[in-house]
Length: 198
Image (cartoon, rainbow, N blue to C red; front, side, top):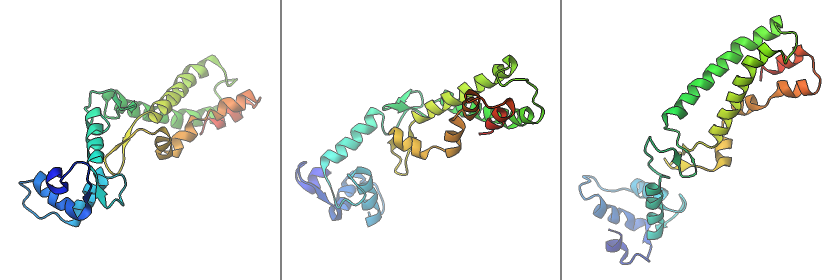
């Protein structure tokens, strides 16, 4: 289809000829291809959404990314390129577990503040429940920063900075151990418990 329109794989196809190429690709499509279809094709296979032409190497690159796993991904694959596949069952289960951890904080921290059941912040019974949940939150945050997501163009995003920017600020705030920072600086038990509210 590309050769019929462009004449050579080295020549670009202008935007006004893309609809002609689509006719050869989708031979059974019953309607005419419009400028909307042309725009979608350019957005998918072009270097940017403002492109006015398409070249064969860009189309080949996008198709190769799909075959390598940066496009469509099977549910049983651990990685999407260099990031974790979010469709994995254990990855989905992590979200359920972290919600349970949030419920623990929501119920247990106010009780700690109101009644101070432990004489010190590092009481063994307090640590037995606090440390595992804190470690779970930190582990979830690290996993989340290394988990791919699909953008508005249905392409997998694996850039860690973009993943961080998209992360819920409440998760970022909850990762900081303000209670342990207060404890290290000598704050009393009551203040350390209040700091767990983050």
